[in-house]
Length: 128
Image (cartoon, rainbow, N blue to C red; front, top):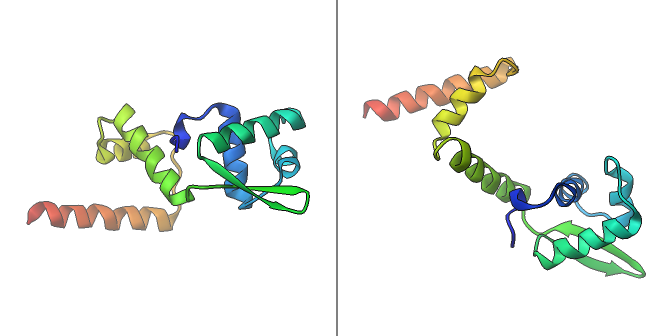
């Protein structure tokens, strides 16, 4: 299966729609897509995604239902590994520092508390 982060923009849009909806017909996908291409273009992209092993379909009567083969968590993990390797030399800490230092970063109190817990756990592990 081709990693999701190596798909074209339109392929990623379709995969994103399928992650949100769980499963959907080509028409439902097209209705949700931003600046949607034609019906035939959506069906063509779905066939390409099937050949790549990213999506599968099942038939119910005359309708095809599509879904992503990989779980969202697995796709997230794969994309994150690629991001870390490409931009941060594989360092999660460097990525976290970049995110935390971003002027656009906004965190809820719960997120800040969770981040503090993670930092404290990392400190304890380093001291051992």
